[in-house]
Length: 114
Image (tube, rainbow, N blue to C red; front, top):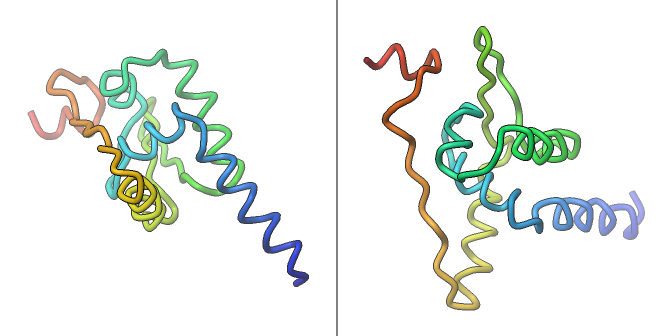
């Protein structure tokens, strides 16, 4: 592989995760698995906006979907990306937002816990 090929791959990944909505989605997913309905409630974004951003993250191979009936759950393919994001924030003294799963959700994962 040529040097420019690997640099281009890294550049694509960094460009992809650089969007504020996508960064928020990655942080909200964290090291676990989160359904789209949780992302909507945690981030206060519309389902269509989240789906568009998840599609971009999927295309680059950053997130992996799993369908559970009518609900789609996402997880990070490489959770080490969270360390990269945290490292950048730490260098600049920026506090990362914390996202917490909602209590009132009807998704299959939450229904099992009720």
